[in-house]
Each structure stands twice: as C-alpha cells, then as structure tokens.
Picture 1 (cartoon, rainbow, N blue to C red):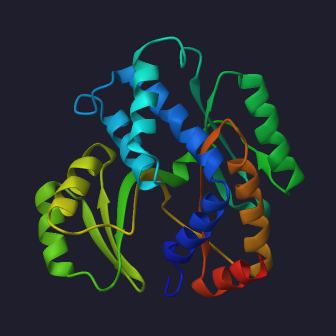
Picture 2: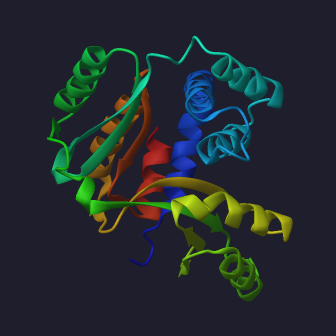
Length: 250
C-alpha cells in the first residue's frame, strides 16, 4: 500500500527503545544467557546465539557485556528455569498480536499479558488463533538510495529469498536460517542495513487511522514494557503521515 510501510514504524520503535534502553538491555542479556545455555557459547555452532549477538550489538550493547552474558549462560546456573512462551490475541479493531516471552514464572507472565490486553481494549486468544496470519522471516531494510541491482546480486547469491522494493526503501527477505549468512555477505560487500531482524511478519496488514493507531500502539507499548516480554508482533499498517502525527503528539 503506497505510503504505508515499516519505515515510520521503525522510527517510532527506535524512539521508544531509546527511552527504555535499560530495560531493552536487560531483555537482550536474558536472550543471550538462554541462547548460550541451550546451544553453547560458540556462535558459529549456535545460530540462535549468533542472531542474539547481532541484535545486542545493533542496540549498541558493549561487546564486554555481551561476552559476560554468554559466559554466564555457558557456565550453568542462571537460565535453567527460563522457558519460551508465546501468547496470541487481538487488540482494538481486531489487530492481531503475537507476544513472545522468556519467563521463569508462567503464572505471572500470563496474568500480566492478559491484564495488558484487557486494560487496553484487547483480549487474549488461544494458541494458534492469530499465528496462522504470520510467517517467520529475516528482513534487512535499505534506503531508496541503495544500488538495487548490486544489492540484489549479492543478496541472491548469498541465499536471500526475495527483494522487495517499496516507496520508502528496499527489503531483502530471507529464510530465518539464512538470515545471518545473507546479512554477513551484504555487510562485507558494503551494504549496511538501516534495520535488520528475524521476526514474525504479518502476511496481510490492517491499515489504521490516527485514533485506532494510537490505541494499538498503546497496547503494544504496554506489552513491551513487561519484564517477561521479549518481542511483540502485530499486523498493523500505519501510514507515514499518521505515524508522524503520533510522534508529534507524543
């Protein structure tokens, strides 16, 4: 949809993340500890850890902090009782939401997530109620100024699935297992992405106007603020114009 893209959403999320950097770092450290605990401390043999390291460094976490978290996970003890839990539900106007948690207390997590939904006009669903609307993929985003032909050649040679040109940029799409290989090849070739992540991408987006977008983003912010919540994915589609209005209002 023309004018509707993730670019303004990235700006909104970055502003929110900058304001909550301490909490973001705490969550990233938890991911690193658990990934090292489950798959070992060598990122070459542990693609989950490799992706976590990349995510932490992109958030400007110091390498020393990353290394300490990996050592803590590899050393045993902490991380034993963390488990991955996924919750699904609907926000205002039927917006679909996936909430991924790392928690050592399932009862606490489900209570806090349910309260966030209920207080902001949403409701939790059963497992699978919205997951079918999403697919897991790697996305590396570049500005319109990029040499698209050269980018495409490197990306496809490295195993990318698709190149998508939008009004505000170019996306390289990968399978989750190929994400780091493609990213490494692109960076080595001089293509530094503006954003890069493995996420759950909605296959059909729901466009929202100002009031509805504010309600949906308020719910997402409330969920992301919970200690046990690692990631929140939605199928909202907010235009650049509406996102600019939201950012000005906040």
